[in-house]
Length: 485
Image (tube, rainbow, N blue to C red; front, side, top):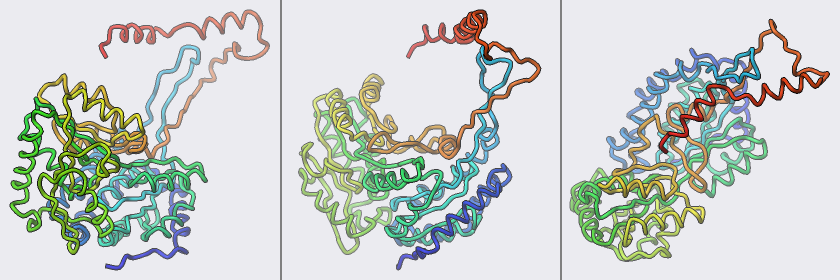
């Protein structure tokens, strides 16, 4: 399919139209936000088959997997936002110190303005629409940019967006030239999901206008498997998280560090699980996705030379098929350990202890490779606690993979090379919101203590007032003294 491209001359007017919509004030009221989110639900339902067909055309993705990871996820985000919109929008009264009374203080959430959402190709529906849900809930106008590497999905999701508020929520399609022109415009926030190389380009462009950014990136997300893990369950959960979408998931387990005594058992269990999921020949399974394009296919094919193929390793360039693969005897210096794999290839490395695994992950993080996700598998809480306490990552799932992003009460985002900022649920609303500080004072009393002339008596009273601890602060300090961390 030929990619539809927005003419370069139309991009600036689209952004200007979104700006006009925002400046008119129509995106701010709760009524608009609620109606637009409800409209999104309706439009997603009416476009569902078109979306599923597009994902099948771009990836060979099974309709159920496409619905679960793309459509259902976005609908859940909308439902959660609708349920909590009034609570999120409400001004929040906060404490005022004794020295500033009589007065009252509030945090008033207001939209940031016009936001740009740039989506990747691996989940082209979810990762475009979910940030738009958050931006709309926060009362912003949106300019959306779907990925050109999934052309069928780009066309489908663009048609969906056209059925929303045409002026306040608009879309730009195309490749590098169109994205470059888009980034030359002024936005109030840019939300980018993708890789670190392009993120640096986005950040530089944003800096020209002092525009804040949210960067949702990736990295090598490890799974640590203890000898005390339930190996059968662990294998199923790692295999599901890794081979879903043919490994083209930013939080897929990128490699496994497993204690040596259970290494062979885990590899055997992974092989059995792949057979259980996809049959004797995964290439014949309609449940297994294909690689998005030839460039990514050939990049992944080269990584198969690292270590030894324990099982899998089958490729077909014509259909962009790479079988679910586990590599063993991999060293930390092999090419497969040098970059995020983003495909159905899983290196399994032996370690002597969980502590060695923790040190391995921590050392890579010290070098800047902080993973987007981290997975720990053990039936001993102390071991899982050791993994969590001794490492850094955007998020953690213990005895599971991927599931931590399903809870809208948890933020999703990275650290360092794996990204900055977060969203999902309230965190998405906050990303696209400015918490405005509002302080109101009464005119019934007007103490002259802060005004000149600064007499000795005034100085004495003011110093005492400003150093006097609020009783509530003293109580909080006392509580913290006895609080267990």
